[in-house]
Image (cartoon, rainbow, N blue to C red; front, top):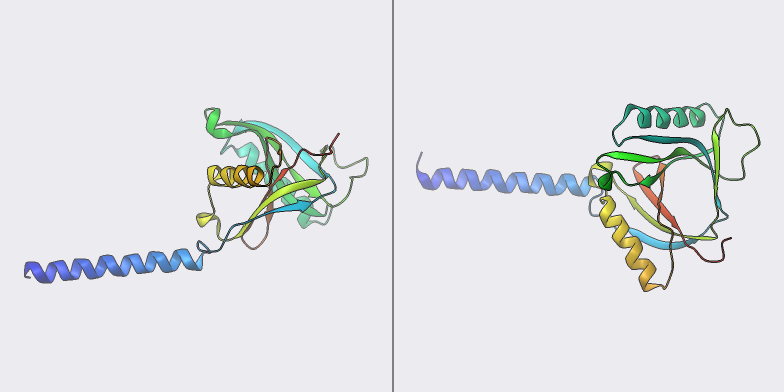
Length: 182
């Protein structure tokens, strides 16, 4: 084969691959917009388990699966959540936090030895996007979006996010606003 034919073939292959990657990114929701907004909440009522483990630990996975079972069996109604008290990036892969279920209303007194947490909040900043997990924004981008939004709207926010897991590839992260909360 001549050099010019090889170059044309290689160029065509590269262009075809780029088109395929761009189409895949589009189909997975990579071009969907990220919505950042202020929402009204009536506190966060959570039940679940505290954890201290490495970020990719079996403990975290097991607790998350346990919460999904409570939802699947109809024992509890809500959405799975994760709150990191200490982000894994700054702690050599170790994380502490809470894995549980965000309930619609205050939980009853007895819930299978699950820890109950109430996060006081009247408003939160919500970041949401409909997309496959492989094309979701990274935690640094989400943090930057929240901080920029808070600065633009003169809001003071807490120092943790509540990651709410919805079905159908929907990312929802909420950070409570620190106004009028005891």
